[in-house]
Length: 388
Ligand code: PMP
Image (tube, rainbow, N blue to C red; front, side, top):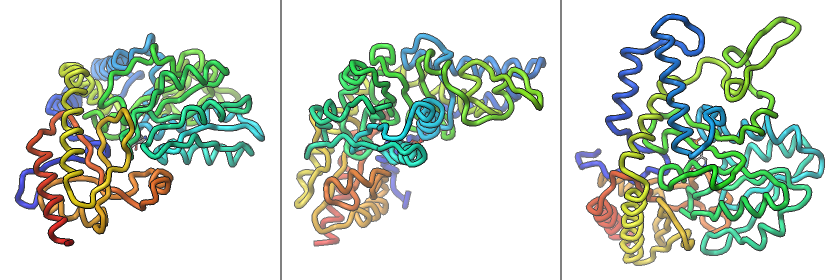
């Protein structure tokens, strides 16, 4: 990039793809390309096996009990919308409440706003403290007999906060309230076990875990999925159709209308296999080191301030540099070959909470190195010189 080696520190937005993923997609299109679930011919059977094996790979990676608890979606956003419209909508009445946190990504805010507006319900927000941790006493206080669902991010894409989701789920369940976990930023960095978490739903995107764009998944407890009606409909999600009556397939198929992203699912399975080959502990150790190094280097810069200093953080370092707009920092870094994000990170309410309009965000992945943190630091010093 600009004649320099690329230093890619925008992994929270999307990740680069390992050869294993590219090859799996290439092999699918070259050898097995056909539609799924329909054909009797060999290629269609191979495509179906590949697609359903990918579902099993997701099930295994998330620690789910049953592959039928895995619904393929376009990503986290579509998974959250599916829960909002198929699970929450029928049980949300006037005066009811949806509870989310103050650090949610827009995709875990806007679907609930839309739904609440339609149903005459209220969106409630768990406040966060100055470090970027949810205030758990407030959370408990906000869980009421009117709360129909809690939607909480596991890892914040803007602050890096790792929320105590297991405890938060237990607290909600003690009051009979179901919980959706937005795991878009968690699956790339942490070991996930939906059985241990006991979450009702969990959503993630393939492209943030070294897989392709346009594919992700929703985990949903089987009992919930069985209760839910589809909110998108068409081919492939039915058992029989007549003009009088249509009978839907069992979950998860009733939530996968139309031809799915078969190659995407194949690529996602390869990505999860790749991550499992490295191992979650090795990934966590490596990324923890990078995060600590980067935080120390950023704080050496005169006028730099971290946004988000929660006790437990992962993957993301958000900061502002006094007197230099984040976009200018981003542009100068880009000229040095360093890709970071500058902006509100689709979390405008978080920016407002800290009284900033934007931050610079460096986010880390498995392939980043200490040398790259040095390149970031050099770029930041250059920005400081330009603007001093
Ligand atoms: N939630 C979080 C915490 C995210 O970081 C993102 C992506 N930035 C999303 C949801 C939305 O993911 P997608 O755009 O892949 O649907």
